[in-house]
Image (cartoon, rainbow, N blue to C red):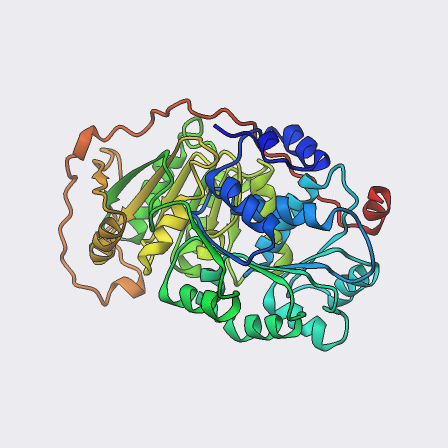
Length: 434
């Protein structure tokens, strides 16, 4: 199997990779490296958790080489502020022994602070589409030196309605530039974007069958009658702190995320983080940081965290609600079993969600075993307002598990150290790096 030192990576980046404990590239990293280095436009399709970010950052940073000039020479466009921060963290990791200036910009925070950082001079700009265009229209960002544009999580950008901004960004960069398009899924929309914005001879790399769950994740489900019973089941599972060491609980609605936190706060107030779009920017960033640093054990999140958020050693993903879009299931459970490690995904399926779950099983071509509800689980008969419009008098019985129902065993397949994160975006930190 190929190692990073077989790819002719520059010594400073290779040293940073070794320092972080990475010695072997993933398939998308290996295949994308030579294409990006050649200067050709590229579309990369790879499932979540396979290292797409490093796949484009390693060759991109080699092209930038060292700090020069005042204006960005490369731009990375991502859909959310959380992803801006994560990409910047990855850049900090890779440039430990390099002099490269990176700035991340996103909405919901003071634009003047970001403007000052851009004025100081940058090589690589990481941005959400809206904030990029705001700063460009104000004359803060100049694009005449841009040689490389990366569009990351392209499918998510489209889902969030960023097509007009993306089109505007690609219209204001020099005509002669390299465009790299990365996505976790392939669709007619992504194909249309590729044919519209990439050169006719672009290279397509696809490293996995569409909608394939991460290799080492074990998947199970519980059939649960209603929201309050789901919360009771969640309490029982999370009480086992040894087993449920680091858990992401996904909800379909912000209301359910807040309900869960409210109900669990009496038990584990100091162990909870909550992440959804109604939370203030600082609150969201602090919640994610606390979870990533191991300060909190449980993160309750709407789908804002399903894409691209890289947290090491997540032991369990729990789908409190079943997603409306089947593909989101794959992205959610991709938060565990990352970098070759084992992980567990558990779904709570109500009667109204069974059809959705059937669609998920059809999508991933797998049948997911049903676990027996715990004997000591309190089955609530109370319904939330949104549940009362559903068909009443549904009787639930504890079903027998398929395939035994055991889900606590893990395979010891991890050979990589957790990725270190270094991030110092203060002016003093940048001066020291220079």
